[in-house]
Image (cartoon, rainbow, N blue to C red; front, side, top):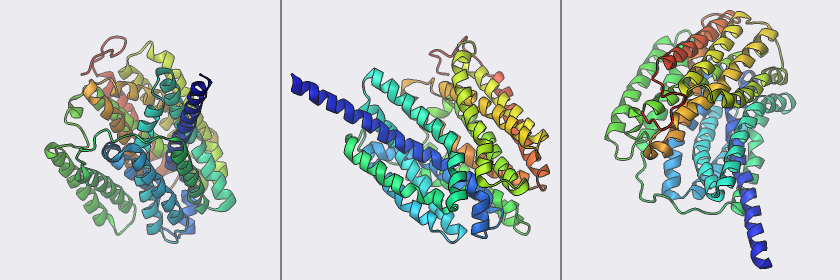
Length: 461
């Protein structure tokens, strides 16, 4: 009897350490989205890169992460999530050294793109394994709470870690630190995380769809960055046109693919469409606000990366506060109204930033309001987007995350380009105003959407 109890205790202990290791994967991959933002001015100076590289530095990771996220889930289904997770961690660790030793902007951008690819392989497989090792209802709830909290903490610490490392050791440290962390995570996965048989080893992969999606997003981002540079407007417009054509090709390919990245039922789901739209706008208008604030603080107001990081830290704390506040609000408002409320907060925050551009007190107030709005809108968008039929449940979370990452990539590219119309703080204020208009308009659209009473319940429109 004692032997059985000891074995059960060992299994529980191993499962707890497995959850820690898998949440560590989530932490590192989410950290990669924000940690480099405060280092962008230092990277531009250190590599003598042109200013228009700013948009690429802020978006390439999110573009590859979001564009390949669903493919990463498909690979886990076909080859086994633990195996694909290990490949993703090995790639992430190796590429960290490539990025840290980059002497040219193109090599660094290539490394960041591969880091985003590694994150796309790792995150969906880590989540699937998390649900496997925490199969009991109580353990599952605790593990998912830890997963969500880990992502929130990574968002809070991203700006600060990036600023501290850049000030203390140079921008290269932001990427170099991932190498030892990656080795530790690999050791944890090998030691504690059990293998899981491929859920669908005969699944056909939509490689072409993934390539078209990433190529379309990158063409749009490159086109937007080239529009900032005099003499390259025609090339920029050509790149934007190519991006639009690639989007059309992607849509056509998805209709013909036997196992498309986007399930055929997804576009017909009102809840998933609206949830994805809000997820996209959430990050498009807040990630861009963070990048613009970082540039203004360092390039116009003369703050160091560490000072800029601590100035922006209230944004992430406000996101957590908004997420907590969303629970009592959800008892009173349907998801669409809650989305509108959160988007209204984002719009208001961007307007405060625009009106007070150039003053630190106004900047802090603006990011706090926008962060609280983002916390409310993000929870509401997830709740709305996952109120779907059972056949779409597995795809909904992946599509919502993809929309959020692509929102970061395209939103930052667009608003940084708008901000280049005039010198800061005027140009920055114009971009923040555009972000406010985008969030406000989307909030109004959500107000016109049909609601299903106090909540959507089991309505899968």
